[in-house]
Image (cartoon, rainbow, N blue to C red):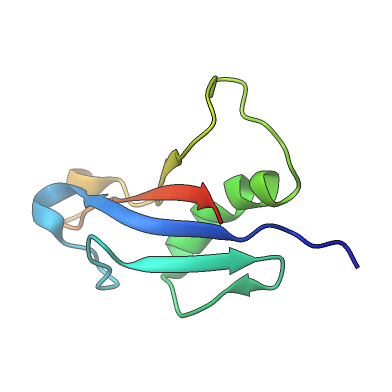
Length: 95
């Protein structure tokens, strides 16, 4: 069976005074494999991250990303527009 990399998703920023509706906080870490996430995560964040994580797991590239290293990706909450709840920004790294 093919060995896929692991993707570490770390919360690096939460817009709008740092409030996430699900309770995620800066510094929270989640590990993704081909089998999913290692612990509970907001479904909206998962839905936003999965396309990028699938590309990373299968060795794909992002045309706007010229160097190796972390990729930054946000959840689908629109930040200040959504009744005071913030958008969570994740740093995605291959581990």
